[in-house]
Image (cartoon, rainbow, N blue to C red; front, side, top):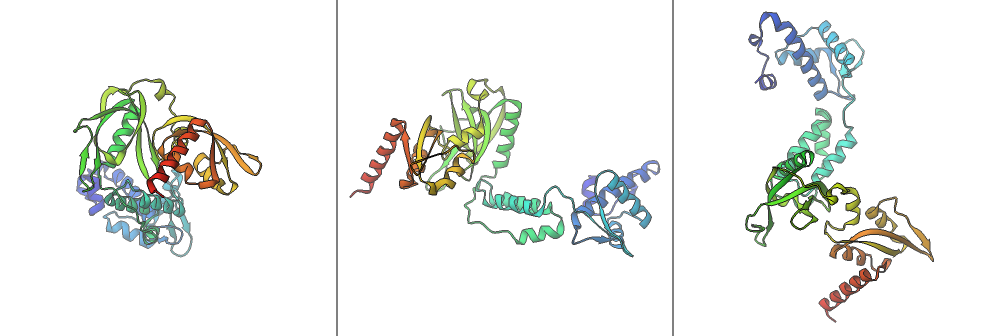
Length: 347
């Protein structure tokens, strides 16, 4: 109630008794002063003493010059830095913020590009992130946003899903949910006739412009992935998550490097031979610490990779610039894939 009244209208002094009014008003005045400076000022847009007093008066908070100086001193003493340009009428502003403008721009671009965030939530995120820069720079950020040609999902439950999953991971509980896919007519079709999935959540992973739940399935005894934007009615269960060797040793970062397109495959120690021209692509996938050996003008390396259809597609996508040399069973799978593709296209 108090928060809504302070934001929408003037302060109602009748709420306070004489005994506690002075102390309460002082606390509220300092709080509103900080909000005002944090929201409306920066190094390029300071507020003068007269402007601050006028804006506080509009909120129903009386304040005098001497009182303002004392309040700003209290803010600085408590670690809320307020800077001043000293002149006939001092100008005050806040410069130290949690995020710099370039950092906020990166966050805004990431939200715009993320497919799993719905259009409605994207607008809310953009507004909230931009406002972290203060009113003046928030407008600059909003006008400097590039509208990505990104197909956004329409599932408004995504944030709720992520919250439930996160709570379950922290509390080591199972999660259950309904899972659906879309038909060519863009209608939902639920897997297993509305049966709720029950799994042990391990982590949430952002990959290939999608957000996934990585979990352990007790029924099948393996790790599986589900798209968070395809989930509905996610619920943290009362049942404790299973303690398995797989979950205890799970490493989300390491597993993501092994996987291709979030498709599950059998982990294999795979040896490669690559042309130097694709070195950036190799580092992008396996990290800058990938160990490469140069031999006869070629780069040779070995990684643990989950061999799946998307792994094979990734390899052949480099054409004659990348070759799997071992093990033989993986080489055989790639040859079979290329032969089927050739047959599919015909002569």
